[in-house]
Length: 209
Ligand code: PRP
Ligand code: URA
Image: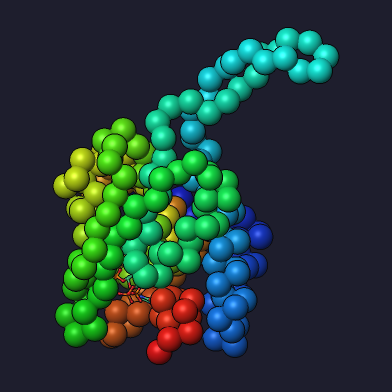
């Protein structure tokens, strides 16, 4: 069963409250999504393996730790996931970035895939899939399908806000994918929006309607 981590760090919770507020404008919304993505990246990388190497400090030789293990692939679900990319790259600048383009049909709420481009060495990378919103879970499940179909073996999913329905959808379809959430909300409304949520993440990030 997927592990679900709600990252309830005070800085993340404070920033998430401003993100949720409908009076927060596009510029501030975008900046805060970027900051929260950085803070969440700190948590999501907590289990990265380390190895010891020998270095020369100005004082002496020393054994010191560096990251070892597999390389990271960062994949935003277009379009709103793009808002989290730079924030994660601040901590993991060497990550390669793939893209999965999906939109949710407003009538059926089913995801429609329109673009996929991943790094060549998919099988060798640990993937972090990012999208601010996990609502019905259709988009995340489809994006994970898409990564796995192309050979991805290790995937973590990271979002700002999730509905219980979306968490269950990932767990049912992909029990090997751990889920990292800043805010676990109450429910979905009749239009598939997260309640209380933050509204339409893509529109708020890019000032569209
Ligand atoms: C939003 C959001 C997720 C999806 C979540 O994208 O960014 O990708 O909805 O909903 P789900 O869990 O029910 O699938 P949207 O389809 O609005 O596209 P956009 O990012 O291009 O605005
Ligand atoms: N997509 C969004 O952007 N917001 C929601 O609440 C649900 C899906």
